[in-house]
Length: 98
Image (cartoon, rainbow, N blue to C red; front, side, top):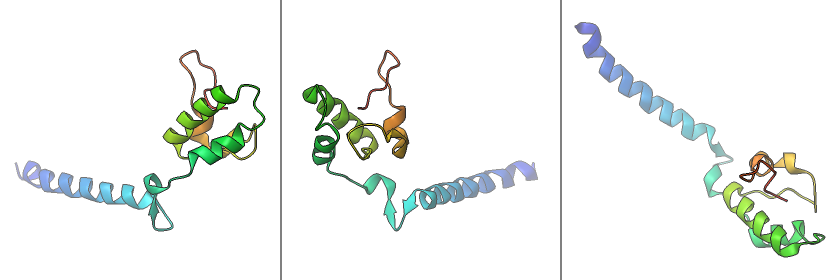
C-alpha cells in the first residue's frame, strides 16, 4: 500500500518536469517556436513570381505558410529547408505546397 501512496505524488512531479522540459526544447533564442511569424504574403509573392498559375500558387503557398510559418527560398525546390512545408500533401497524396 505504501508504494501506491508514493506513486501519485511521484507521477505528478514527473509530469510537471516533463512539461517544463518540453517548453525548454521548444524555445529558440528566447522565443517560442509558435511566436515566430513571417509575412506570408511577401514570402509567397516571391515564391510564386515565376509560376504559370500564380493564383493557384499563392493560395496553396498561403495555406502552407500559415500552417508551417515557413516558406522555402527561391521560386521552386528547396522544400527541405522547411520540413512541414515539404511534407504537406493533398488528399490525393501529391505535394500541396509549391
